[in-house]
Length: 101
View 1: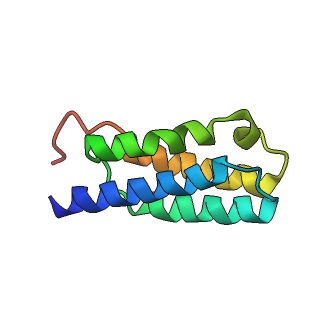
View 2: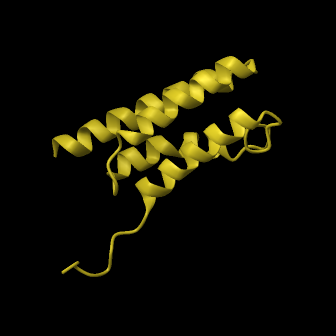
């Protein structure tokens, strides 16, 4: 129970970071800093999070696939975006349909 609670808190923090960034266009250094913070927060979220955490992550997911972010001209930004998307893929990956032996 505590793990899902902390996952929800981290999800809300990641959402808050994107909400702040969405308000204005960020210089590349600030965007990279923001992406690094979001990636760090995403790494703390457990796989198969609660519904509230998934809901909190929706704005982050939507922000990462916006054309301005996904097709950014800066290579470092592209790498950071892919790192965040990779973490989101880990978080949302389906459970194994079988038990490992």
